Length: 265
Image 1 (cartoon, helix red, strand yellow):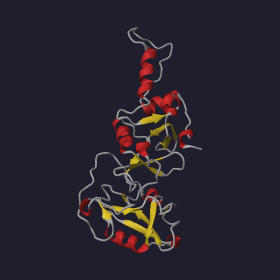
Image 2 (tube, rainbow, N blue to C red; image 1 turned 30 degrees about the vertical axis):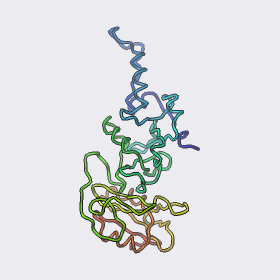
Image 3 (cartoon, helix red, strand yellow; image 1 turned 135 degrees about the vertical axis):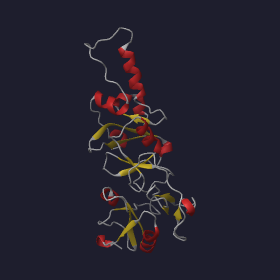
Image 4 (cartoon, rainbow, N blue to C red; image 1 turned 45 degrees about the horizontal axis):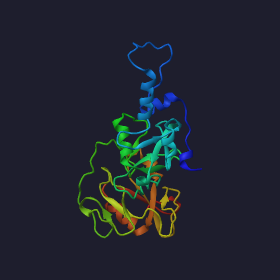
């Protein structure tokens, strides 16, 4: 089933709470006669379908705007309940839906989608707009799965080692052809050049303890605050064993390398 079909509208009040819309007043509500309540409701409903910076949301009440969505990605709130609305993506958001931390677009952040609870790469405008609207129900994360608040800059630090295809800070922004710079955050200011998918296709994602990588590979996991580590453990990616260990030993912020059977390397 396409993601755009994976929505479910609850009640109008939910849309009003989460999207800036308004609940139409009841017939018994007092008015001074100077305002057309139905006109106000129409304006509020329209604004609920478009964020100020142009990022659109999608739900049944957005009508044609919803139908024009190429992909409608939903998120879960902090209690794990499905939201009544999602984010409408466009061609410019081609990597929305890729599993974090493997976001090929520089500056992309992560949010939990409704489909399978994983953190997916999202345009930072989505997180910035939620923050501006005071919406704290859908938390965003840096690619290393540390919480994002929108206030912390990524520090400029020196390159910890040469020859490991690291990026950002003193390591520079360039990565080898076919790879992207993953995982930069205030906690991990140096990124890692790696592929989004395997050559010829195939997933590179892995989980700490359950492995899932090929022979000769290790599962790279970011070391984060203990309260977030279980989430980070679900969002690793495969790389050659020797490289994983070398990066783990020098990466600012720390990391883990897991081998077959969940062995810590």
